[in-house]
Image (tube, rainbow over all chains, first blue to last red):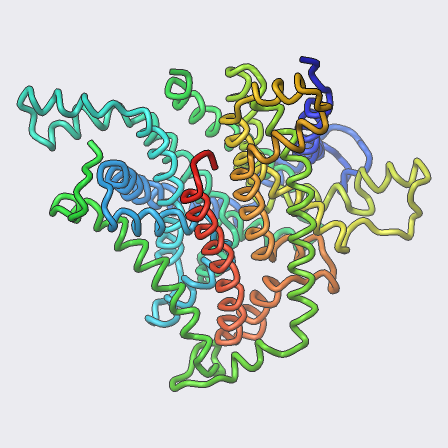
Length: 259
Length: 289
C-alpha cells in the first residue's frame, strides 16, 4: 500500500511546535539581551543572578519538602489502591476506581477551589500542611494509574506458587509482589514528584502567607520584567531536571512494554 | 486472582480504606462543600458567614457573566477542534511506526506535558512579546506592522491552550490507533476507496473511543483554564476561571466563587456522566467500541 506523507509531516511539525518554544527559552537564558528578540552575545550573568536570588532557593526548599513527603505518601496510597483495584471486582472497587480516576479529569482550578472550601470550612490555617495534603491528593491518582499499567502484565500465578510453597501473605507481598512491581512504583513516584514540583494552580489556592513554592515564586517574578531573564535561567535548569527524571522513569518501565 | 465474589471481604476493606478515605476526605467531600458554600453569605474578612443565603447564587447568575461563559465555551471548543485535527493524523502515524520508535515518540509527546506549566506559558509569552522572535520575524517579512500585537488577544490564548493541551489529545488517540486493525484500511483501499476516504470512513470510526476521550480531556481542561488567559490574554479574553480566581483572591468573596465553581463543576460532571452512559449503551449494543 502506498504510504501517505501527510501524517508524517504533521508529526514532525508537532515535534517542532512542542520543542521550539523550549529551545528558544534555553538559548535566551544565555543571551545578553533582556527580551531575547535578538542575539546580543553569550553570557552566564542570568545564572549568576539566579545563584544570588535567595528567595528562589528558599522557595525551592519548600517545594522539595512538599514534593518528597507528598510523593512518599501518594506512592504508598496509590500503589495500595492499584493493588486492590486489580485484585477485587466488587461494587466497592467500582466506586473506588471512579474516585481515583475523577481527579485526573476535574480541572485543577476546581480541585484547588474544593480544597480551599474544605480548609476554610474546618478553619484550618493554610500553609505547608495544606499544600502537602493537596499534593498527595492529586498525586495518588497518577501513581495508581502507572502502577495499574504495570499490574496488567503481572502474572498472578506467581502468588499462588509462593503461597503453595508456604509463604505468608506478608512475605509474598514483600518478596514477590513488590520486587516485580518496583519499576512501576518508582515510575509512578517520579511522575508524582514531577507533578508536585510543577503544580501551580492547586498550590496557589491552598498556600498561605509565608509558604511560597517555586512555581508560586516564578509566577510572582513574572510580574516584573527585570526578572524575566532570570526566569529563563531557572526554567532551563528545571527543564534539565524534568528531562532527566522522565528519561529515567521511561528506562525503568521499558522492559514491561517490550515483553 | 480477580475474585468474582461480590461480597467485600475484610482484607479487601482494610486495604481499600487508606486511599478511599483519603480521596473521600480531600476530594469528594471538598467538592460537595463547594456546592454548600454557594448557599452561604459572604463575610467581610474573606471567609464565610453563618446562616443561609441565595445572594451568591444570584450574583453568579448575573447576565454579565453570560459573555464570559460563552467565551469560555468557544475558546475551549476551538482549541479542542485544533487538537483533534492535529492529534488524529499524529496518532495514526505513531501507531504505524516500529514498536521501538513508538515508545520514544510517546516519551517526546509526554515530555512537554511534564515540564513546568508556567514555564511553558512563559516561553510563549516571550516568543509572542513585541520584542520577541516571532514578532520581529513577522515585521521583518512585512507580514505585520510595529503597532500590531500578537499578545493579549483571544488568538494568543487559543494558541497557548492548544500547545498545552495537545498531549492530552495525542495520547488517547495514539492508544486507540494502536489497537486499530490497519488491515481494514488495506481492505478498504483494495475495494477501491481512496486514501482520504479510507481514513475518514474506516479509520475515524475505528478510533471513535479515543476521539471521544481526547475531546473530553481537552475540552474539560480548557473550560477550567485561568492561568493562560491571565498571562497571554487581555481584558476581553477573560474566561470563567479568571472570574472564579478574582472572586477568591481579589474580592475575597468565597460564596460567589463557590457558586461559579459549582456551575462549572456540575457542567463538567454532566459531560462525564453523559460519556459513561454513552459507553454503557455502546457496550450493550455490541463489542468493539
